[in-house]
Image 1: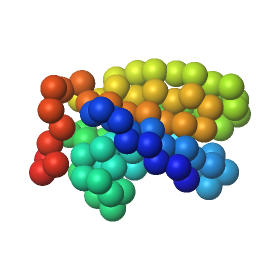
Image 2: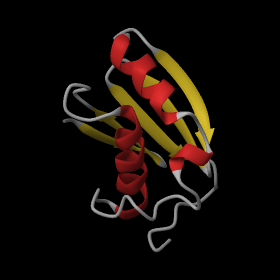
Image 3: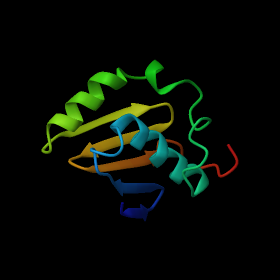
Image 4: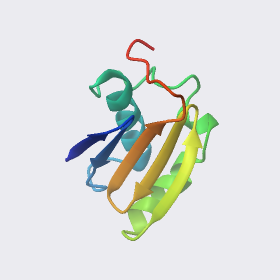
Length: 98
């Protein structure tokens, strides 16, 4: 997996055979917030399923290598393009102690 950090955001490449897009979103948000992926359970105010239909997203992304989709989850702009998940904060600052 490749990780790219930019101004206020991260981009991570994933192998959809080993990780689901839903998990990849949580890991990418955790990387943005905490600099690591070990705290995925508390990165969002609500479960990911409260923001989107995770099973449908997983099926869409895993079945189409050309997919390009963008949406907002909590305070984050999420972009999935092919095997890459990009996350940026919609806030002006990113907390490291959420």
